[in-house]
Length: 181
Image (cartoon, rainbow, N blue to C red; front, side, top):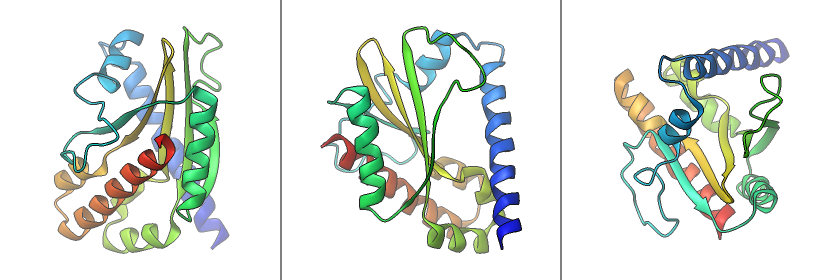
């Protein structure tokens, strides 16, 4: 079992790295364009929104707290909902020594029961694993962001997988709400 988990985590790291490279080296990949693609007014949802549309590719909310407090709140929200915290990593670790006035930390976590259910349905769920929330700060504002798996699950065409992805989206929204209350 340990070898399988090690292989799974290695696979996740490679896929995440390739995805990051794709974003960073895309033809229009200036820093401003990348930020605008993830943090725009039409993507940022107020915490009080009852049921935002699940088709948005990024779930994002603005935090009323400073960066460090928000990061601690995310960790507490993860523990409070009985998820396992896997690691906390600066997004630019190993890539850049300049911050350009921004801070980004990715918090990786998992619910192994949910992952087990999802993998039994479709192993392509590995593209979403482990769950992650990014704490982003720019110009004094702090945002929480997570990838919404629902739009991608719709492309995969597996209805049972879509149901689990809807659960994950609801879980992300709950965690973001917990961290920003």
